[in-house]
Length: 94
Image 1: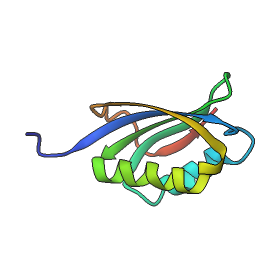
Image 2: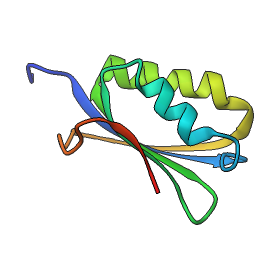
Image 3: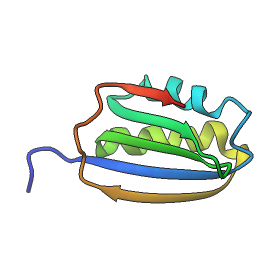
């Protein structure tokens, strides 16, 4: 077993998730956790989050996003995998 339980989670949120401050709320929430990655609006109306960190940190951050923004979310698609280590912080991308 690896010495760290780090993971990468790619999450796609659908619903009324654009134009409601979703990206900035996600970035603000992420700053409270030891995670890296980005949040971005997609052309098809969804919001994409790519987050890397310890499993407990990633799960807690995503849980906080659902708790805070859940009223706007109608669908969630998640893909899990090993972290890439590509990110140095968590940012809003355009």
